[in-house]
Image (cartoon, rainbow, N blue to C red; front, side, top):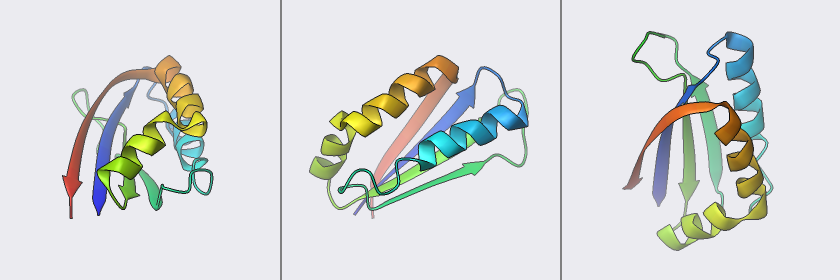
Length: 95
């Protein structure tokens, strides 16, 4: 099992923008068959160096994750996120 954790810092960090990003990210649920689970949580302890959201996605294999990354639904969300994102960091692990 593969878990991918993506930390996201938005350009506009107001709560309504964070909620909008969560809604867009969770919109992937059920659209990509290799995406076993998707979760997003807002940071409850914001600060200048903190990230705003964590996105956690789950896959059966790295190959499935690669398939997810090129899927049109993911590409559409990634394009939108690119317009609101300041920076990101990720950790991918096997469990």
